[in-house]
Image 1 (cartoon, rainbow, N blue to C red):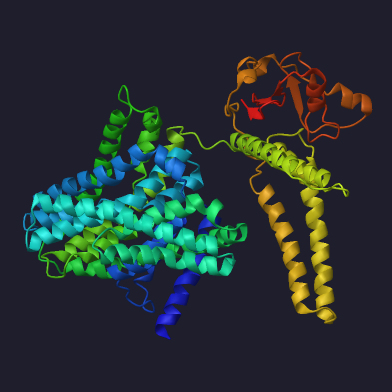
Image 2: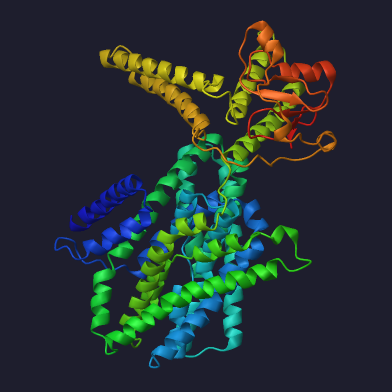
Length: 623
């Protein structure tokens, strides 16, 4: 009962802490650590010792897998050079740098153990970094590099830690270290690929979402335990399996299975990630008390802890700037130029917060090691120090350096264009079907697809202070669904309809409501960037029709045909061949498209304020 109550209390505190963090607009990880530290000094809170097995076997595999299946393999591959520089090179660099400093300050800590504590504090934790990065809106490539780095750096750090501990006890040769690292990385990747192949084949045979979800839940533990049993890297095995399964999910899983998996893993990751930070705070008291009993003087303990914290921050900054110069050297692969400015590079270096893996790895150091209590305090200091110093200051640093956030309008344009191209392929498939259609099903399908696309285009911009058709539809349909649900519940209370039928009808309403919620979730009328949109592709027509500067567009432009008909328009488009201004496809008469069919002028430009994107009617491309 005591354990059960404690676990329930952990979850309740995590949920309450997140709600309070949202209200105070502070990062939840930092608030939960502070709550944990305070909790250790409350008499009714039990002393919690975080065992390494709990983290490395119970928490790490699902956390890594949840991150890996959501990570784009395409983005990961595009940023592979930076990710490898950080996840391998930086971890080794930090291990030796911090180790040398620790040994210099406390000479009684041997070289192998000093390097071991360096390996412990070397890997940053992406949970805190990406949580803060997404909240403040850092560029996506920085978030991608941070996520990719965190997926692999734990493996490098654990191999370095294991090697250093072995060197401290029995001694190892350089060849052994090299072979151990090769087997850990290559073997882990190979075993992760094997798990991917097996799970992929199983998923092609399984159509039940419940069974598919069950397979998903066990996959990270199978990959991790299989690799660890064969003395390879369980971290890399989980990451490889997760990356490949996430990349192939649209092919090997049904739509219901993908939705269920996405919701389940988001929930699991939310609970585990936040519980981890609360547990970090709950370690504070007993670690501090253990260090107080050390034979090393308090002043020297404070010096070595502060020096290790400073070294982890400075060494990362030095490495990322050195890596940037290597990535941007003449002749480098253009795809490897992930970080394009010194501001981006500095933010990437500053987002090096440590997390639970660092603290768990410290507990792996044998109890017989001299000054182990000081080593644990070093790890805790680095974790807490980086989270609070860098975590709290990262939003200010990003604003001060004017690091651009993802552009919501650019995303809306890319989303609308992608849907348009997908629809073009879908209509081609529809035209290729051999079927009789006496009921006009094909026309109905085209209308529904067009309405979906129009809603996406309407997220770009509309006439000021005027509700777009998709917004009006969402508001009206949600009001209808609420009334429909209320009526179904009234009928349910009478008991005249079977409960199974009632559940099916309520599920239909829930699905439709969720579709509306998803379609409108990306709209934020308060977010409007000062710069113009600069996204899309190219074709012969776009190349031959350059954009008209926004300053040259006339004020008060109108769709003359709509005015003559006495109708309103949603957005305006301008033909780049003749200058004709007409209404978009979300408007009732679609005069811009009608103009294209009448004149064959292929390219139009948005005539909305602040936009300079163009559209090719022939190739369905934005420019």
